[in-house]
Structure formats: C-alpha cells, structure tokens
Amino acid sequence: MSLEKFDNEIYALTSAELKRQTDHLEMIASENFTLPEVIEALGSVLTNKYAEGYPGKRYYGGCEFVDEIEQIAIDRCKALFGCEYANVQPNSGSQANQGVYGALLNRGDKILGMDLSHGGHLTHGAKVSSSGKMYESFFYGVELDGRINYDRVADIANIVKPKMIVCGASAYARQIDFAKFREIADSVGAYLFADVAHIAGLVVAGEHNNPFPHCDVVSSTTHKTLRGPRGGIIMTNNEEIAKKINSSIFPGIQGGPLMNVIAAKAVGFKFNLSDEWKVYAKQVKANAKTLAEVLIKRGFELVSGGTDNHLVLLNLSDKPYSGKDADIALGQAGITVNKNTVPGEKRSPFVTSGVRIGSPALTARGMGEAEFEIIANRIADVLDDINNASLQAKIKEELKALAHNFIIYDKAMY
Ligand code: DSN
Image 1 (tube, rainbow, N blue to C red):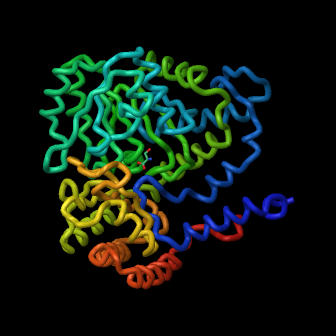
Image 2: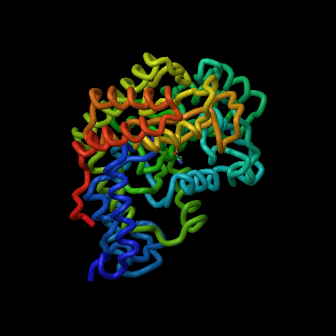
Image 3: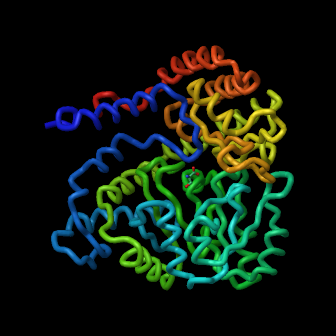
C-alpha cells in the first residue's frame, strides 16, 4: 500500500506542496531544501522506537541501534562546531532555547537579548514567549545604521546586570561579534548564550565567526542554513553545563526523542562536514551580496546598507506600501518572502515596513550570481509597480521557467 492509495487526500496535498516548492522561488531566509537522503531517514522505521534517555542510558530496551545513531549524530555535531558536548534531541530551535534557559536560569532571572523588532527572536525574551514570561527580559537593539553597537550593549548590560546574555538573530544581515559579546558578559558575570540558528551553515563552513570558544552555550536549528531536517541542537564546552542541559531537555521538557529526526540530523551533518558544503556556504553569501547590490542600485534601502551573511532586510518605511503589501505582491509574482519588522518600526507586526529575503534555498537549487541578478531585478520591478497584477503574472511565468532549470526533487520521490 502506498500513501497515494491509502490516503490520497494527504498525498495530493503533499504533491501540491512539492509543485509549489518547484514552481516558486523560495526566498524565506529561514527556509531551505534538505537532501533527499535526509528525507529518507525522516521517513524511516526509526520513528517507531522509544528511546527516552541518552545513548547507553535509556529507559527502554532494544536501543542498541538507535544508541549508535544518536552517538554518530553527537560526534558529527561536535566535529562540525569544534566543541566538546552536543545534545541532538531538541525537537525545535524554540525547545532548544527553552532547554538552555531551564538548565542555567531560575524563574525570574534576568536575561538580555536582541529586540525582536530589531532582528532578534521570540525566544530571546519577547514578552509573548515563555522566555519573556518566566524570566525578566531586557533588550538591546541596533543603531540607526542598522548595526549592533557593542558599547551600547555593554552599557545596557551594566545597568541590567543579567544572568545571561543572548546573542544571535533572525533578521540581522551583519556578522555577530561573539568575542565582543564575551567581553561584555564577563564584565557583568553573565552566561553568554548564542542562538546561531540562522547562520549555523555559514559558521560550520568558516563563512561566519564561530561562537566557540567565546560562548558558554550555543543552540541552533538544523533546517535553516544547515539544510538538515527540521529540529534543534545544543552545544557547549563545559561538562557541568552539558549535564544540566541534558537533564533540562530530557526529562525536563521532552519525552521520547524523535529518532528518525536524529538520524536525519546525522545525515545532514555528514553533508555539512564535506568539502561540497564549503562551496555551498560561500555561494549563499555571494548570492545574498548580489541581491543586496542590485536592490541598492535599483534605489531600495537595506537595513545596515547591505549584508555579510545569507539575507537582506529591505526597509520600506519611506514607501507608500507596507511589508505586507510587498510580501503579497512578490508572492503573486512567484517569489516567496516574508514581511518583517524593521528597526524603529511604525507599523504593526502584522503589517510591518520590511521584507526579509534570503539566498539559502535558491542556492541549494544550484542558482548563482547570474540568477540572483535577474531575480533581484524582478523583485525591484514588482515593487516599483506594486499594483500591477498583469506584470506580476508575467514575471511569475518568467521565474517559473527559470526555477524549472534548477529542479531539486525528483517527482518519483512521492
Ligand atoms: N521562524 C524562524 C525565522 O523565520 O527566522 C525563526 O524561528
């Protein structure tokens, strides 16, 4: 029995999603295309196995093979980041972060993270997230030039005296200086925690500063620039912290680990450790740079004036249309992006004055600077004439033809 025959409703929708991913240009900065081999591991019998605990210390029998799988994932993860300890069980980036807080903080402790509207993340202390409800959260942001001012962060840290400083972002186009954050954390006796979910794929290729040895603890997702399965990881060089993190994840906030996902993480890490990975990560940056250069040439303003990583943040504050309008118009032209707040945001988070555009997914399809130049010009064409539905339809057809030159998944997979 196949999925097609057993549940045609879900099969048809999965096929429709594959077609959407094939026909459109995926430019959400946090999305990517994982390897077919990763998908194979995700869809394996490993999903049947309960394995609460850690390799060699399980609460269930029959774990001899999943023990080996999880140990391989741990060893590859440590090799990738150059660290001593790794926990590969978090089901997501948010749960990884929750696990880190649970390990090192008590309810009510102070944390200092990057403001969500300046490019931070919900789980870095936003008041609507448990990180902002369980802990007393304070924020640093970016300056008018769109960059973090480390002297300003030091001043805020000195006033707040947080127990933990969180660095890392979800919409920041510049390198994060972990060594500077270390100095600041040391000056106030705080833990330094880096969430590198967005940049991890660049970090492990040497295309971005490594948070080690500067940070006490580092978390990431595995599905963004790392191109693995959807999930989270936590790393540290400190044995005591590692023990606390293990207990904080299981039994603290999770039960049975998703062994199929852990196997898929191991497969993804194997790819991340290859020479091919370095070529990919370099191209991700080169493509984002091309995107930035063309958009600037076409008269658009970028927060921070450019990019050092995999994304650009378009500032539409001076435009008569919002981030939401731009997101919809680009979607109609076959380009998938997301509306995003910008520093000093005046519109609501549902409307916004920005659009975040990333290069990882299209780079995974094999596109290079030449394609990104075409795409950036089409983005500018759509935005310059934002109410022109027939132009959007025409561009959609042109970009679909371009996309079809870069097929990543074989239809036979489904
Ligand atoms: N939702 C992710 C992003 O888009 O950046 C972060 O978790």
